[in-house]
View (spheres, helix red, strand yellow):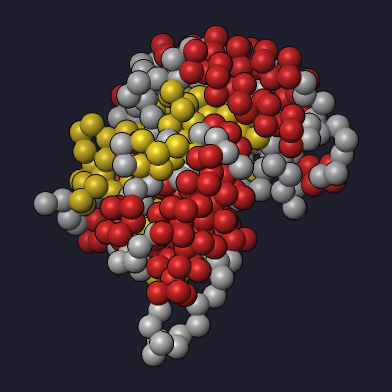
Length: 414
């Protein structure tokens, strides 16, 4: 029986770089697009034997700004994938786009080629806020982009929105949410602005003009409430969808599904091995062309580490975790974890329903801290259950590394 597989293809090209973004992308390198397309196709062809036994049910072109790559190149890479692997006829095939780069003729071509989902980086409804973020589109561009995508045949459209922006008030965020709902997308992602070291925005990390944690919390809880009223059910910390429009590809990351990444900085998880390609377009293309390999980091995830990732990632979702599933991954009880979850329930941060523990919206707000405590409890329980002759040291969970892993896996800004 064939197993399901997700494919992620990283397109690192952007027309300009947003001031808050720390994901791998490059600007001013349009002349390298054709060479990069060829490298992607060659990489996929060479990987084809390892796709045997899998049915590809999700494909995600992320970036960067894939729409800047052009429909011809995107279709060429997708066609290579279809020739090299078994792409399901009902696969979810997503392309990310920024509103200013949406073109109707290009989108018609993409839809006819089998792309069926669009993720638009809208981010804000205020043109002033968009300029402050380094975005080069207006909200009118975003509205037009949704209309173009619909007219091109796309029936599944997602929009990204950000809160916690400089000088953003609760009223500003309310207006932004209403504007996003007014676009009538099928899926909405809401991310709190996070100031990352190495980005131009980092100089504002202690700025009084940024909403503090309490204000961001109010904005988040407001979004959960408002979006539910308009039919967008929360299914993950930052993601909301109409019925049946949850991102099937991103759900693989949160539920331990297998996926393969192609392109610079792309990550993969196959069997028990997680690995990443060079976060450098030149090293990636040279590696593919020269046959020297493109893998920068690789690690095997099994046993205790796999159980830790189960807790870390599943607790991001509204489905949460179960003791039965945990034991199926790692043959050890989770008594300490359950005790902690029970204490969270008393504080309104978690609930237990139908055999599963999950965070409440208030718990999601504290999820980084709470998951860190849960992983520490898991480590303590492992230490307590070691037999006297098992002398291998058990280190406390490295929360920084685990959350770095989480962000690497999910590609989420929060």
